[in-house]
Length: 114
Length: 115
Image (cartoon, rainbow over all chains, first blue to last red; front, top):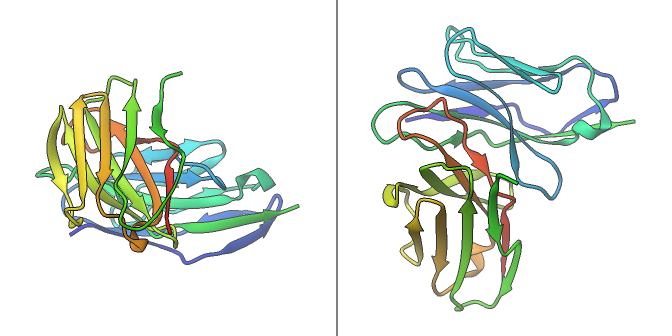
């Protein structure tokens, strides 16, 4: 079956630090990969996505590259802000059969201090 | 605003009661989902409907019954609520079945607390 593994949190950084949140996946075929963000007390928002190998998704200064050879989709940002404090979820969907559902990682809590 | 909306946002109830959560999307999507987020923030699919037809039904107690009166609505009815049902329930929608590249867009969530 499909699975997503993300680095355990919490992650605490100072403002303007570099962020990496690791994500690896297990899936058959050619999954699409997503990062969602959940700000405190809010729902999930799509942050970025990539649908095929070597695609780079980017949004709001965040980037992630679909690496099929390492089955990874690590999230990066060059300079985090206090407003980036949230829980970040890596997820995948897989084409074929009935696999339309999102399979999520366990989430990584990021706290950015001023 | 085009969005996925849920009502109510908060729901506090006693064990044994029956309650419903409503979800509506005005995005023109044909597929809708219910996810459960537990106290550790873990998210898991419960149900999915495509064009009012049930296509995903994970291992969920049969006290939970989804209903889709039309493509734009997917409601969740829960009978005989238990303490363990306390969670945040998210509705989501997307366009296309089998098109895994289409992102699912989420509602704001309903925080259910069972006392």
